[in-house]
Image 1 (cartoon, rainbow, N blue to C red):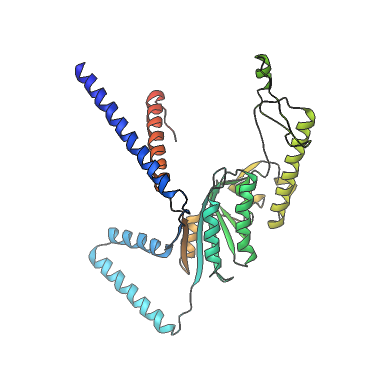
Image 2: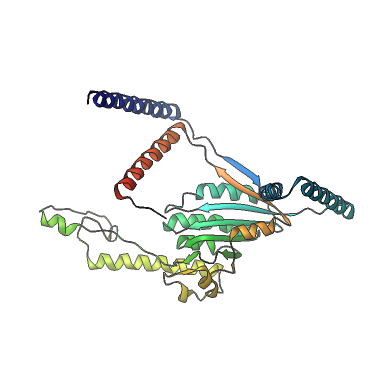
Length: 343
């Protein structure tokens, strides 16, 4: 017992010291960054053709013996020389700019997307192509409205835009997807949800039960329609519903503008469809995975993956590391407690 007591004391001191160090680092970083402008991010560009070539060569090295590999490389060298002789002036390959958008409720990835689009539009021509690998279940109206407006810049510049969906593009996600000249979906991806939803709890009855008054003062008849703590009225509910209907109509008009082939009233019910059914509804144009499409394009085009990485301050890095550690501790504790597995 004495050993356990000493160990617990040592552990407490260690944890206290670690926390103190983290606090000092955060404060120091905050003081250093105070009054300074946040440093800009950096555009990272990688050539996907080299990635696919590396996969193939690695497999060849594993499956073929030395003689077979030597013969293959020799044959490939002959083919390269033959192509060079046949084409004294080799034609430049078309370019494909590949972007990724992994959307959360606030469409936070829009900040990187806007810089990536600005960069590629400085070089891209109508002979090139932009491929967006999109994953999003939707979120805030204004956030996804801005993300969609960024993609519209590509269409306005006359550069072909292909949107690939492997898992989900629903609600605000589909609002982005519909801007593509072509939408390619995996067979079981989730699409649609062309609708608007808003919900909030109301605890006014609970407050009244405990004799607690809550007053809402506004200047303007519809400054506040529904509230969490105040007493909601039928007039307020009616106005709130009108606002939702207006937003839904704008959503429908936006989708219909970019995909006029849709029977918009039939698909704008808030329902979702898997890729196979979405093809019948003309929500998508083709069933394929993004890997299949890009691997095929890599045969006759140069593929460039663009990613604009924001530079995080020391304070943000320390905070993210601490948050991740805390989440791991909670998750491990929960799994031990419930002994549940998550697929």
